[in-house]
Length: 310
Length: 186
Image 1 (cartoon, rainbow over the protein chains, first blue to last red):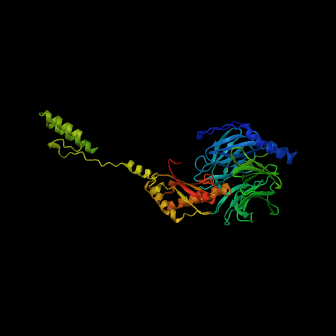
Image 2 (image 1 turned 45 degrees about the vertical axis):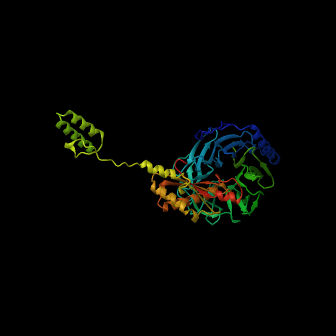
Image 3 (image 1 turned 30 degrees about the vertical axis):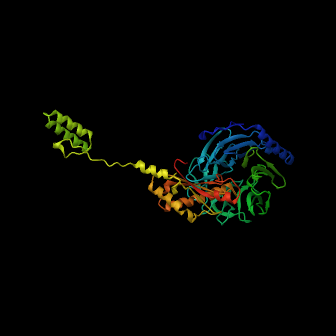
């Protein structure tokens, strides 16, 4: 457990949420997990991060995977997006708009402090951790357009540009062995998912079905790629078997985004909108079981499932 | 400096030359010091404190800066709107961009932030990139019209700060936009 962060720069206050709200969510998740994953105790000790919007207030919250013990790591009057856990579970990188433009921060969870890691001219966003936790891939517009760069996770040293196109290259994600980066690019005319070496170089296209495939999220075992596909105006989560390129759409709503694998690869947490409200949804990796996880009194989005921490 | 020196010297001459007429002396001294350009006396009529033409750089800036907020001025118009999936500036906004570029040209110290935005559909991060395309396009146009690169920063807010909260095409069309901000507003 850790203290709530005071957002001093904004003059805002961070306060502990009433436990009632977290508990309702907690019971649903733990029921679901208990029913479907009996004996899989790994995920109970993991944590999740997500963003809650209530009125004009945004909060980055961290909770146990069963939803208990939600705490606010950042409270802001401006949006927060793209939270991602470091591989060691001690830090979260995220994008904050508190300075009227996107800037990437790394939050040290148990020490309750944060640092800016990317604040170049233009926009800074889409952080992704390398498996060794030393490098963060980010998307910068400092040299024009949106391109992928590598920076040291502690913010030191120069940036290294690794994508080189006249198009949008964004949403980088490392493969679990750290050798490749999956990313979204519209270099072919429409947004599709590509893969290139972790230090850049030639990219191969990965998705071919449909005209909008974004947000690549490789599974922890590297066998499957989750992503968001648009079909007939509906945005849904799909899984591609990387061995045979077979695709299965696993959700049936129309505004899905931000899929995040549990560290055991057997569940996916994603954000969706039901009845005008932002809610989280937990889906089994085979798509058969779905559970909705609303947040009382607010819109919840941008989930990120943390790693195993032994 | 030179002017003052001359005046002082002139005063010295006057005083020296008018020892026997104390009235003249004091009158001359007072006149000399009190009124710029006043003639101190017959013997020093070449000395005049020239009028200084005042240059007030605050007035122009105040006028220009207030135009940024004046509803009657085109400079108070700060938003450019886009068709779906587009980032080129429609002809109807050309005049607006020209006016802002002119302001930047004429006010080299002015700083601008351009924020690009999208409607809510699709990936948040991909929308940050699409918004960036929009603000980059406006910046490029302004630089071509004579604004300096250093005066402008183009950024994106993606779908995160909609102008309209609805979920209809009408709302979405208001959210696909670039917003122009000046120092003090960001």
